[in-house]
Amino acid sequence: MSYKRLIPCIFILGGKAVKWFDDPTVVSEDVIALAKEYSDNGADELLVFDLSSTDQDHDESIELMKKINRVIRIPMVAGGNVKRQEDVKKILYTGAKRAIRRHQLGDLVAQMR
Image: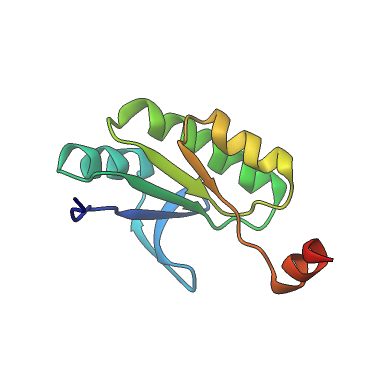
């Protein structure tokens, strides 16, 4: 039997929660409190997406993901700025249940050959 699930998404940019990929309007300065609020108010799962563009910013987002996972009581799925297998491992070590990696069409074609 399938059921509906509530899965909010937090986009992290510069240590803050923003609205969307292409809208850097800050939704919350405190990403951890926002994640806890979602967890405490009925979310079934939490999607956390890192929008950083540098490795240093990515590492800061990874640290935020670790802190988020400590305060929530629901599974976390995370992704963003995943360029190599090491990035997938970093995300999984935060406590995320799954890591999301976006493939470029060219990458998929190269893998199929």
